[in-house]
Image (cartoon, rainbow, N blue to C red; front, top):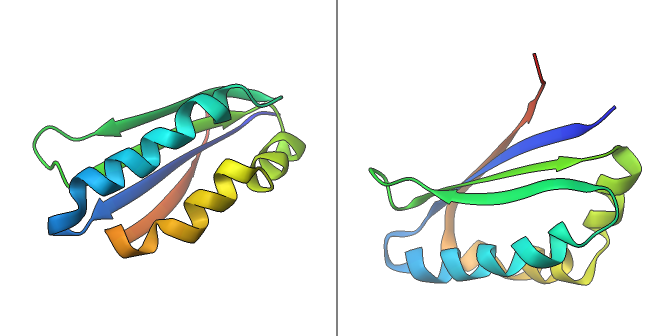
Length: 94
């Protein structure tokens, strides 16, 4: 069973570009990982501080592998100074 997540980031007012760049560095390496079905980042037009990451993985093993990748570790170590709020939702295909 595939796993799809939506992660929302609200950037600090003066850190929008830094947040965007950090999230952007995740896209290509994540898409190249085994088991990645989709990995996209969206910035809301009407709320430019808000970013949505929508990612789909073939299974839990693929998602766990992603969480142990070098680019994921780099993101985890560096996002907090730019981020005012972060939350995630698991999505289900209906």
